[in-house]
Image 1: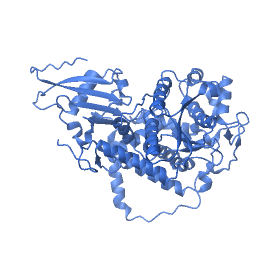
Image 2 (image 1 turned 90 degrees about the vertical axis):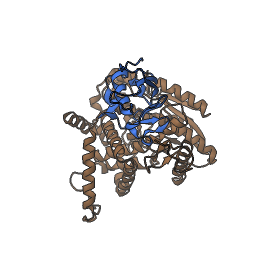
Image 3 (image 1 turned 45 degrees about the horizontal axis):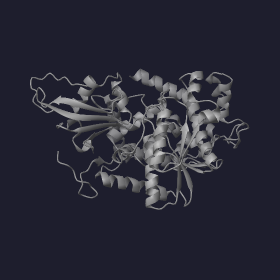
Length: 410
Length: 113
């Protein structure tokens, strides 16, 4: 097959087809356009200010490595005047995190950024290995997710930094939109789509500059710039529900590559329709509420395959729907939510955890509640009670049902 | 690993295959593999990516979790394929006819970061 010329420079050999617009680009043009688009995301959202100190949540994986590389490049190219540092969390999972932390240490040298590592062990007195030893391999993702959120904030606070950027990409956001849609969780759907997820209660802001970047392009960017990143799967239990959402998103991308950004866009549009009191509700565990879902984005992924045939059928259905669309009347957003009570709307007052001082809607924050359970050598079951809807596992029943449905499907 | 294609013709081609992004776990933790294939298949055609996939699953991949690499006789969605550094979509995907010295990279985008 004859080589295709680059859509942009018309000269070099194209090596990439962009998922979002099918443009064929050469290596150099791809790298430049990818960086330029991140720059546009950053300037469009006024993400940074000159002189700002920004911590990059760095795991050693592809997303955060690309984020660090791109931010360093842009900071120099466009003279943002940012002071960039790397902040890593050591969950204390031997054979998993210790290897990726070596990658982060190399990244710190490669990008000339200072690196801080905060460990679950020092923060909580429990490493994930120890947590798993106590509670088993099931359900430990809850602990890890809750601990990680606070750990990033605490690490940033320790450094006196008020802005943490994470490597969440468009695929992650699309997954989160799908998950929250499937759970009927409007508050999280709303918060999860925004590029900045700081809440009033927290003084540490979170943002995701790669929000519009396809995972595929992130991987290709890392490949073509030969970035040093580490890949592994968490050795503990995968998150089945997110795994299914991820699979769905990837299957859709295969059929229609623009799907991912379209889902992100739909999520943003739906978020705009979510009444303010709903989107603001239930942010007990603070800044993290929105980040919470995504915090585990890098975790388990291998579950829940569906056949492509179902997707094809769905595609056909969509085409038929489209044909019928012109006959539809526009549906207005109902003034009141009908049906079941909108439990999420109950107002919450943010306070501080009595034990650790972390922002929480409960007297005791979730991390401390989990820790109490661990320290008392209590089984996990007691934990879901009383945490209410802020509990990520609040939908665990649904997740279990989904798993069962999958089993019966296959 | 040595390849054993029992063709009566000695004509073979040699290519390199790389697994990254976490896929190496499925292939004995070896990132790079040198693969020898017959230059012509029994029906006279040249080996394609499809043929390579089948070959990899049957002869190279020792891990039982074939479904993490192959779905419905093709590469699982979420795994990128680069043919001599170019997206395989630019080269005819699974119908690309392999040439001596080709470099084929499989990159998973599915693993965590």
